[in-house]
Length: 112
Image: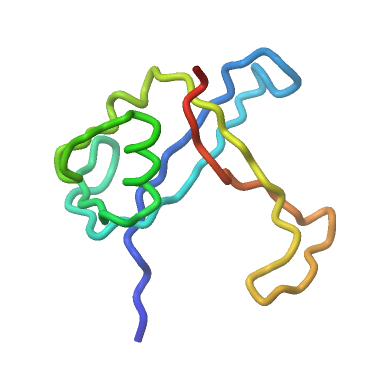
């Protein structure tokens, strides 16, 4: 009855010197989009005006364009501050054992 919502994944790499620098850790954040036109690296998609990805791009890139004119290329070399959170309960609000807990990207902002 319900299909999977189309998603675009942004992958973030740690570039600030610290405990996790040079360990090859990459954090991925899935964003729902209205439609995926072409998949793979450099794929095309349609943003939803009220979606998380559009709001993040408008905030981080300070864009004043229509949602179909925004490009992700500007993010490639832009330093961003990523806030994470640890998932402690599953979708049914049951406690996840400590060994099975994981981190997700909670917020993305400019590192200025």
